[in-house]
Image 1: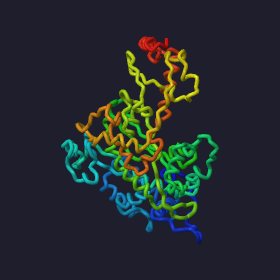
Image 2: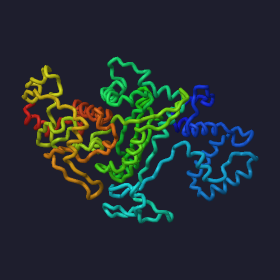
Image 3: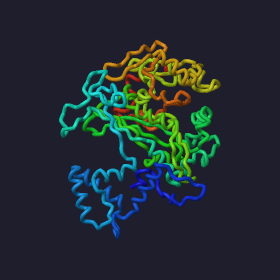
Image 4: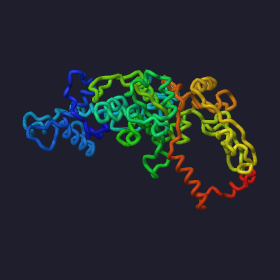
Length: 477
């Protein structure tokens, strides 16, 4: 269970310290204590149950059968009397929970305003009603005499889980693969080979000098937890992927880490920054570094962590990047140079041939396209400093119901909706590529449309009467 929870296998004995090795830090010591508890017999001559497995199974039964804390304490007292003297049965439910606390599987609950205005956190921790919209913090329904908030954010700390990746020798070796195992031959096989990664190393040499520093990718999207039963309810998980691992490991389930679980019932939209505050604070702390024990070298080092980019579908891209993906300037790559054509049934974004080399024959071709020559030049990448200059024209944008700010697309702010909370990270503006579109949605949508049109599937084909009229208007057919 410890291996599954921490995401690795084959932990070697780390207690045989040589002369050059250091003592494990506090976090590593707690983990090795858990491994020791997993091998400790519940009582002398017990062959089936260990100290740790007994607590885990007992707490599992408590959850399944809804036992109260009082009944749990009584049951533990009874076990203490029945089992032989010297057994490791906890004295109370509180002590049983403490055994599992060091696993780091818990999460922090943070109350949120029902209108997504604020988190009842830090300065607002003791507030009883939202200072922006005036709505009460608590749900009016009774919940066994306890106060329950309308919305509760779940925050899963990432720091202990990242530290544990270096507490197993086998995993520690894999965390060095991007520098020691990768072959830099000009072929893009891993994010390490990308321009973004290399430009980040050039801008932050002190970070790249320590190969054990962690690079992460952040992915988020909404899903319906109740399937077809409730199409209006949407929950947003925020998941991290570790790019230090080789490509055959970094996208495996054991190495994905849940960071936030943003509650419904509706999509957070532009207000997602309200819920990302605990994550940003933790990432700023990790950028400064935390002491971590390396089981391979048997030494402590300062581990630093950076988010390389986000990964989303196109609607979620708008929420995290703050660039509106609707309207006249919808393209986040072309931005103010987006070429828009209005058709009878929809808006169409053109000007794709300008991304080809200048000598490419398609740029001058009239017959293959809409009868026009396109000799434009692809727009330059927008740097972080240029983005911040444009965002200054946007002003302060409030969050929550009734706090939305209508912005003018003709102003210097263009299609920006807000200043993304990611710019609070010290390194964010220096990234070459801050946001990505996920491959799955692009492959599925494009391939589905092509196959459905070629096979003329009823209800799915794009070869419709309206589209044929659009092609006539453009002079293509």
